[in-house]
Length: 222
Ligand code: C5P
Image (spheres, rainbow, N blue to C red):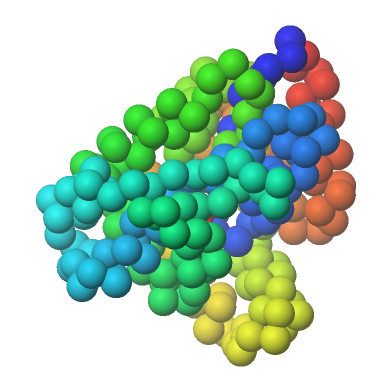
């Protein structure tokens, strides 16, 4: 089989996107970061002063604006109304509010539809929270990546320090816990492991080890 679909889900800051990107590169598949779509909508709503609890307005905003994930040489770019917002959607302001936007059913229905359209003939690695359960329920490979909150906060902390950003380990732990809680307890497609997903605890694994394990699962499924 040479064009599989690979779903990678898991809680916040578990390293999904880093790993998913590397797996996609090794297999020459496209990589789709679905979290970036929820982030872009959140960013735009904040810009426009739209209340993040207002489901109808968020749905309209999403349908009226031109939100696209574009594959480029630099990897996936997030384009909104022709503007590259790939960096802008990574701020703390967006990170700490995106789960409110992602709770809404009407927002999710539209997002899932668009994500499913991105899977055509080519192999794809898609990461998110509901990929194995809702977006690609027939994915050939489903991985559910977990790691302790301490480890995830520690990794984020190091990343922030390396980038020269302010970093507070306790605050990061609290933010990650809060985001997981909202994502896991929402009524529409909450973060849960699909019954047929393989759980991978990455707490004591390096990025390369996680990538190798996933490639191993893919090879077996081929
Ligand atoms: O993956 P990332 O951390 O960038 O995702 C940001 C947020 O978007 C998540 O915390 C979650 O609220 C939402 N999300 C989601 N479903 C997805 C991907 C992301 O609800 N498939």
